[in-house]
Image (tube, rainbow, N blue to C red):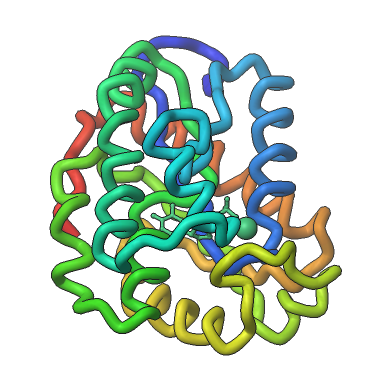
Length: 211
Ligand code: 2DT
Ligand code: MG
């Protein structure tokens, strides 16, 4: 069952625009899995707790200015600095529920006009997710949800471009969930997707992201 440590953990990523409900759904999914005796942890990127993460956080708060390519590479470095820990957690049977990953990295930087292949390159070799859940919410609807927090990127015109780039990144590991449905409905869909994924990948080797 999902509660045994017989195999490796699953790498489950949630993606979506700002205010799409990712963070709340990650928390709900995590407590559900923990309640079922599953070894799981919630992670998020950017991880603002490292020194690279603090540079990113200052940039997002408009407290510092950084060149677009430079900040792109910092976001990627922020995933690379967590790769070894991520691998050891997964191999020891812990499932990781991750709020944003490389897809945010590419979609947000490409929305600034950077070349998409250039954006993908630094993340090649990170651990490939077993499942990417995209919470699909129209940019207009997301903006209505209590507004944005005032960080860089939290502007509707920019979010529309991000949504287009997310769309072009979809592959076979993606499941698109309608994030405008009631919170409990979304939660139920995520429970099923994650539970199936955890079962399915117990015996599968980890693979690297190749795009
Ligand atoms: P949060 O609001 O989820 O903390 O994200 N971003 C994120 C990027 O531009 N590149 C990345 O690689 C990642 C992981 C998305 C803060 C903002 O950072 C953006 C929103
Ligand atoms: Mg945000």
